[in-house]
Amino acid sequence: MLPARSVKNGCLPLWGMVACCHWRWSLAKHGLLQIILTPVSANPFIYMWAYRVLPERADEFRRLYGPDGAWVQLFRQAPGYLGTDLYRDRDNGDRYVSIDRWESEEAFRGFRARFAKEFERLDSDGGQLTLEETPLGEFEQAQSSRRTYEQ
Image (cartoon, rainbow, N blue to C red; front, side, top):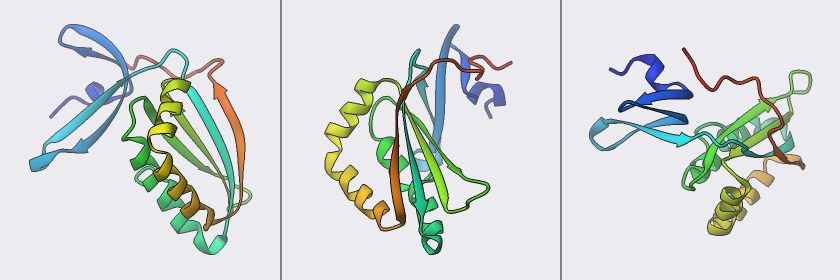
Protein backbone atom coordinates (compact mmCIF):
# COMPACT_ATOMS: atom_id res chain seq x y z
CA MET A 1 0.00 0.00 0.00
CA LEU A 2 1.22 3.50 -0.78
CA PRO A 3 1.86 5.82 2.16
CA ALA A 4 -0.96 8.36 2.53
CA ARG A 5 1.35 11.29 1.81
CA SER A 6 2.16 9.78 -1.59
CA VAL A 7 -1.33 10.41 -2.90
CA LYS A 8 -2.26 13.86 -1.57
CA ASN A 9 -2.52 16.98 -3.66
CA GLY A 10 0.79 18.76 -3.48
CA CYS A 11 4.43 18.08 -4.23
CA LEU A 12 5.20 14.40 -4.50
CA PRO A 13 8.60 12.73 -4.61
CA LEU A 14 8.65 10.69 -7.83
CA TRP A 15 11.75 8.71 -8.78
CA GLY A 16 14.05 11.21 -7.10
CA MET A 17 12.25 14.25 -8.56
CA VAL A 18 9.55 16.45 -7.09
CA ALA A 19 6.37 16.99 -9.07
CA CYS A 20 3.58 19.35 -7.98
CA CYS A 21 0.29 17.88 -9.06
CA HIS A 22 -3.36 17.16 -8.45
CA TRP A 23 -4.30 13.52 -8.30
CA ARG A 24 -7.28 11.27 -8.80
CA TRP A 25 -7.61 7.54 -8.77
CA SER A 26 -9.64 4.88 -10.47
CA LEU A 27 -9.74 1.13 -10.59
CA ALA A 28 -8.11 -0.10 -13.76
CA LYS A 29 -8.65 -3.52 -15.33
CA HIS A 30 -8.29 -6.49 -12.99
CA GLY A 31 -8.92 -4.27 -9.95
CA LEU A 32 -5.54 -2.53 -10.02
CA LEU A 33 -5.40 0.94 -8.51
CA GLN A 34 -4.55 3.58 -11.10
CA ILE A 35 -3.36 6.99 -9.87
CA ILE A 36 -3.57 9.81 -12.40
CA LEU A 37 -1.34 12.82 -11.72
CA THR A 38 -2.02 16.20 -13.32
CA PRO A 39 0.56 18.99 -13.00
CA VAL A 40 -0.56 22.03 -11.02
CA SER A 41 -1.14 25.04 -13.22
CA ALA A 42 0.43 28.32 -12.17
CA ASN A 43 -2.76 30.15 -13.16
CA PRO A 44 -5.79 27.85 -13.39
CA PHE A 45 -8.91 28.85 -15.33
CA ILE A 46 -12.07 28.70 -13.23
CA TYR A 47 -15.69 29.09 -14.20
CA MET A 48 -18.65 29.23 -11.88
CA TRP A 49 -22.40 28.74 -12.17
CA ALA A 50 -25.27 29.29 -9.72
CA TYR A 51 -28.40 27.13 -9.84
CA ARG A 52 -31.86 27.18 -8.30
CA VAL A 53 -32.87 23.53 -8.24
CA LEU A 54 -36.39 22.12 -8.33
CA PRO A 55 -36.78 20.75 -4.78
CA GLU A 56 -38.24 17.45 -5.96
CA ARG A 57 -35.27 16.96 -8.36
CA ALA A 58 -32.44 17.86 -5.93
CA ASP A 59 -31.14 14.29 -5.62
CA GLU A 60 -30.96 13.94 -9.41
CA PHE A 61 -29.21 17.30 -9.64
CA ARG A 62 -26.56 16.29 -7.09
CA ARG A 63 -25.99 13.00 -8.93
CA LEU A 64 -25.57 14.78 -12.29
CA TYR A 65 -23.30 17.57 -10.99
CA GLY A 66 -21.58 15.73 -8.13
CA PRO A 67 -18.08 14.19 -7.96
CA ASP A 68 -19.11 10.98 -9.77
CA GLY A 69 -21.77 12.56 -11.96
CA ALA A 70 -22.02 12.73 -15.72
CA TRP A 71 -20.53 16.24 -15.88
CA VAL A 72 -17.35 15.23 -14.07
CA GLN A 73 -17.12 12.02 -16.10
CA LEU A 74 -17.27 14.09 -19.29
CA PHE A 75 -14.75 16.66 -18.02
CA ARG A 76 -12.31 13.88 -17.06
CA GLN A 77 -12.10 12.81 -20.70
CA ALA A 78 -10.37 16.09 -21.57
CA PRO A 79 -6.75 17.01 -20.86
CA GLY A 80 -6.31 19.90 -18.46
CA TYR A 81 -9.34 19.24 -16.24
CA LEU A 82 -8.42 19.77 -12.57
CA GLY A 83 -11.69 19.28 -10.72
CA THR A 84 -15.18 20.44 -9.80
CA ASP A 85 -16.67 21.52 -6.50
CA LEU A 86 -20.42 21.67 -5.89
CA TYR A 87 -21.68 23.79 -3.00
CA ARG A 88 -25.18 23.99 -1.49
CA ASP A 89 -26.41 27.17 0.18
CA ARG A 90 -26.84 26.54 3.91
CA ASP A 91 -29.75 29.00 4.19
CA ASN A 92 -31.50 28.16 0.92
CA GLY A 93 -31.21 24.43 0.18
CA ASP A 94 -32.45 24.83 -3.39
CA ARG A 95 -29.48 27.02 -4.33
CA TYR A 96 -26.16 25.56 -5.52
CA VAL A 97 -22.88 26.85 -6.96
CA SER A 98 -20.50 24.81 -9.10
CA ILE A 99 -16.82 25.68 -9.54
CA ASP A 100 -14.93 23.98 -12.37
CA ARG A 101 -11.15 24.25 -12.54
CA TRP A 102 -8.96 23.79 -15.63
CA GLU A 103 -5.22 24.12 -16.12
CA SER A 104 -5.79 26.97 -18.57
CA GLU A 105 -8.44 28.73 -20.59
CA GLU A 106 -7.04 26.96 -23.65
CA ALA A 107 -7.67 23.55 -22.02
CA PHE A 108 -11.26 24.55 -21.26
CA ARG A 109 -11.90 25.94 -24.76
CA GLY A 110 -10.38 22.78 -26.27
CA PHE A 111 -12.74 20.68 -24.17
CA ARG A 112 -15.76 22.74 -25.27
CA ALA A 113 -14.82 22.37 -28.94
CA ARG A 114 -14.09 18.65 -28.75
CA PHE A 115 -17.12 17.70 -26.63
CA ALA A 116 -19.68 20.27 -27.84
CA LYS A 117 -22.47 17.74 -28.55
CA GLU A 118 -22.02 15.92 -25.25
CA PHE A 119 -21.89 19.25 -23.41
CA GLU A 120 -25.16 20.43 -24.98
CA ARG A 121 -26.89 17.12 -24.15
CA LEU A 122 -25.86 17.28 -20.49
CA ASP A 123 -26.74 20.96 -20.31
CA SER A 124 -30.22 20.13 -21.59
CA ASP A 125 -30.57 17.27 -19.09
CA GLY A 126 -29.51 19.56 -16.25
CA GLY A 127 -31.93 22.26 -17.37
CA GLN A 128 -34.80 19.89 -16.60
CA LEU A 129 -33.71 19.85 -12.94
CA THR A 130 -33.47 23.58 -12.32
CA LEU A 131 -35.63 26.68 -12.10
CA GLU A 132 -32.71 28.94 -12.96
CA GLU A 133 -29.09 28.64 -14.12
CA THR A 134 -26.87 31.72 -13.89
CA PRO A 135 -23.27 31.97 -15.09
CA LEU A 136 -21.24 33.74 -12.40
CA GLY A 137 -18.24 34.23 -14.64
CA GLU A 138 -14.85 33.02 -15.73
CA PHE A 139 -12.03 33.61 -13.26
CA GLU A 140 -8.32 33.33 -12.84
CA GLN A 141 -6.71 32.79 -9.47
CA ALA A 142 -5.53 36.01 -7.87
CA GLN A 143 -4.24 34.43 -4.64
CA SER A 144 -4.64 31.19 -2.72
CA SER A 145 -4.14 29.93 0.80
CA ARG A 146 -4.11 26.30 -0.41
CA ARG A 147 -0.95 24.42 0.33
CA THR A 148 1.10 23.23 -2.60
CA TYR A 149 3.27 21.01 -0.42
CA GLU A 150 1.93 18.75 2.29
CA GLN A 151 4.19 17.29 4.97
